[in-house]
Length: 304
Image (cartoon, rainbow, N blue to C red; front, side, top):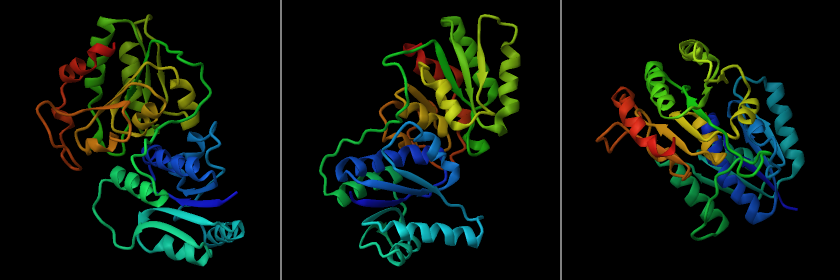
């Protein structure tokens, strides 16, 4: 079986969800054994815990010692890969692939360009595999009962920066409106840095014994996925949990006020919500505060 090396070192969990869509296509068409080199922050091993599409995940990080880097290099060289797919511009991974004596090197190019990362990944994968009109399937494979759902909504309060986050008071107001419409339980999805925000939400609703709230802020990505598998809806910031939810087949509403909504284009399960009457949102738009509770509620109303 052909041995294939893949470099994808964008550090986000959401980034890995996106690129797994295209790496899985390589595995499907080449029927090969894939080794993925990525960063620990992608949580790729957790995302692939029940999925054998990638044989091996190797984490590399800049802070690792020279001794550790040499160890990884010697290990990769011993694998004797037939091909490498590099989801990056630049010369670094190209030269490394040459040193590893890989004959078939496929990469974006030497000079970095300002491109849509999803469109570039799709077009490059199609060109590399000589495919046309490929249907890419974003998914995360986890053990779950088919068609099983529950009355739980994921509230995604996390984010890689404060400008990507909707106000916690907005989430509380939205949850009140949802509860008035129908009884739901809620999972608060964030990282350790959102612990206090999650506590604020839970404290607000603690006297309502009919509502169950669970925080994921101190859970691993794997533990979190196993808790949200059967949720019926995601509403939240453009963050890793938004991509995870969409790839699990959960109807997902992502709030975009400071990042381009085209980051969701790869996945039909993700529906972007932008500030009302806004057609153009990008990096540093600083417009999360323009997304109103009423606007979000009206967008999700048919799904609650």
